[in-house]
Length: 292
Image (cartoon, rainbow, N blue to C red; front, side, top):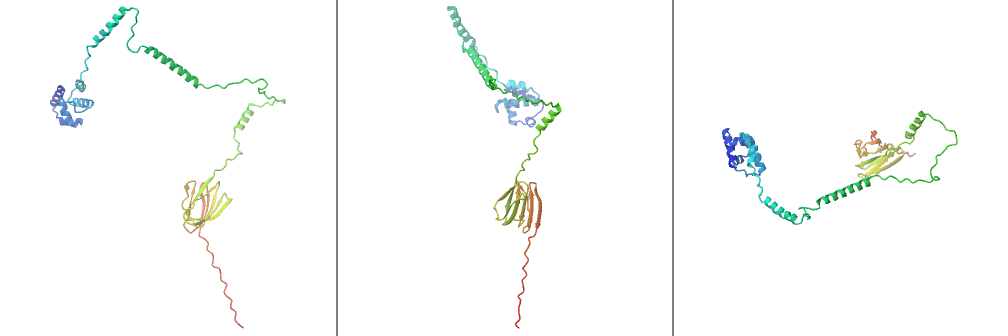
């Protein structure tokens, strides 16, 4: 380890570099560089130290890989007692074979490993075959009907009418077209009223059903129609309307009478007018009679 540090220091000195210069270039802590030059490489985990060593060596012109290999510990030596153990186990086996020539000495390890592997392979193959057979679609069973129950083709007694290929194509196209006489049912829309002040409302749904009432504030009201709503409001600023979740906005200033026509597309007609005031009834002057 000390030799590695001396090589690093000698290379740095020959290039005229200071440790501070290498620390600025490599962003390695100055204390770590000093430890490596002193031959101490246990300041951080070994992978990080090896990376620092390669970077330091590259800056001073040395082979970082060679220094990293020199830093690694030598491989452990192979014990010499293994051949003696093999000879010790081989001697009794040879003596046993000489004493009984027909005797088979079992091999060390699992004696039936080959048979077990073959058995597991056979079981896996059988399981795969059973799975494939189970996944095959079952064909419907066809039962032969007696001659009396079999359907007989209907044969017409009249003359056979011949048609051309063009007529057959036209007939097939006519049958494929949908029936246009069945009209789809129009969708219904819902209109909600948000009452802010006490107001009089007259609501006509699809020009047929009319409601006429005074509604208090905060009371939720809703109507359902297919075509339109006709609404007359006694106070245009007392309520707003929501059509299928869409706010239709303010109707008009407070105190005015509003006439609305609302369809699924929104408000298509709106008229605002001032309320009519009743004229003061003309008083008939009292007739005075003079005495004769």
